Image (cartoon, rainbow, N blue to C red; front, top):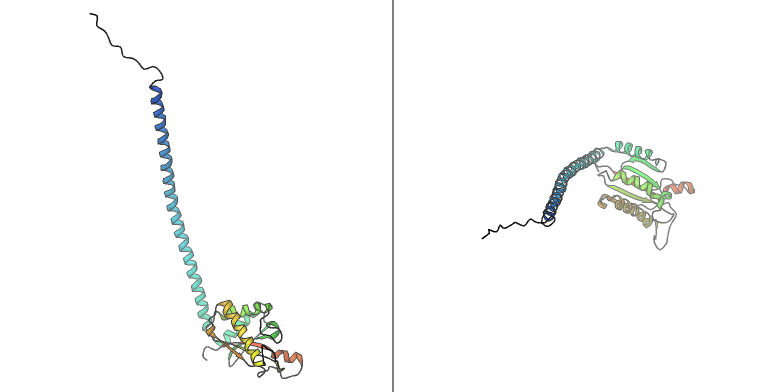
Length: 233
């Protein structure tokens, strides 16, 4: 009998070879994608570290500047609290002159302490105790000064001798006291100054600067005096 030889069938071109090439290409693509994400993760990790260092550095800088500012304000407050009345008067006059207010706010010293005098016309309408908007620049400068001081602040209201009688103020006593209270309320609320540091006093017409019937002289009696009391009192 003739021996039969089994012939191995060769795969036709395109049957298996194409599949293998496709798998290789797909594997390469997956590898590239994996490498891409690894790089992204690495870059993100590095930037995050740098960012944290940058934030830490900024926090330290800001904290340092804040500490310097606090120390500066504390030093300024301590220096001002140690002023005697003469030094305090000179300091306040310098502030007023620098801001061109020395012709509107008179500053002097007597047995009560340092006294700032504001005339009625820059604070109130005649016969009223509500502050006019034009009063703010003057009171703001005073507020900036006294908020740094530990002294007790006396606010005294004064009127002229002409009587007043209306539904709000039966006499000059009530009007002068209401005006002192209005000034205190503004300074306390605007500059967050503890209200316990203030004392409101209304003197009516009992403490005139000028004794006269002339209007120009009488209007000088309509005033508010802000007294920065001596620390030794």
